[in-house]
Image (tube, rainbow, N blue to C red; front, side, top):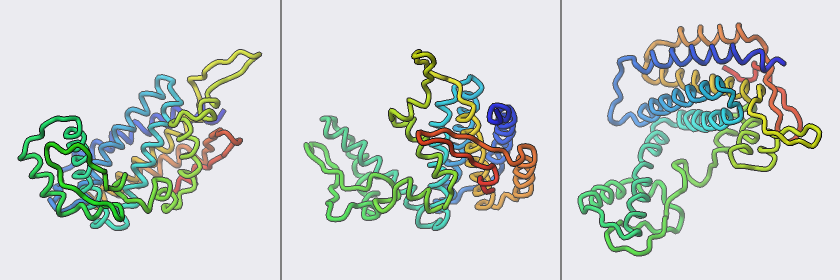
Length: 283
């Protein structure tokens, strides 16, 4: 089984990528106050590094199915960052500004629960929101400043920072990444507790049902996806901050491809087999 054979290599390359990522993140560079995309990209890189570590730990402990939860999250983060990079100033600003919307919701819930919020905190929030709330306002909804004593407040804002015209799936599709599109659905089936997703993890031998922790196909697919998401996030950060690490990163990617060759990652979703060539991971 090729997937099982390639897991040690994929683990080694992800471990090496972690070391490379830590070296880059520890580089000396400055984020300017108005560099919203730079701010976004650095923290997306930090989270991708964290996910990469968690995935490796799970797979080293034979917890293959849950590695797909992390791979799915890495796809979502990578795709949002790629999407934001196409309009760095506007979309980077919107991602960062949306933090005030999440603060509004948190404080709204405190007020509706009967808690008293410090007036200074309310003043800062309301003043900050006055500059940005229209970016996230659902059409025909009304924004209401928060104050203590309110008993009912309708949430007028988009569910996500990227608005109501897009979903995560739309953002992935816009990147035209067929591999991510093919894997995101099966990964989501496991994430959302779908019968088909759980059913893939159950074996039936002589009418004896047993849960299978190990799934080499899942592990190999997750590691390959995790590698791509992290290494290309590295490239984005390197390019944005002019860290001049591109030669090192490109050599690393080329050696990875040379070592693994035209590997085939086999994923078995509900409707048969999808075979994905490593070359489709498009570096």
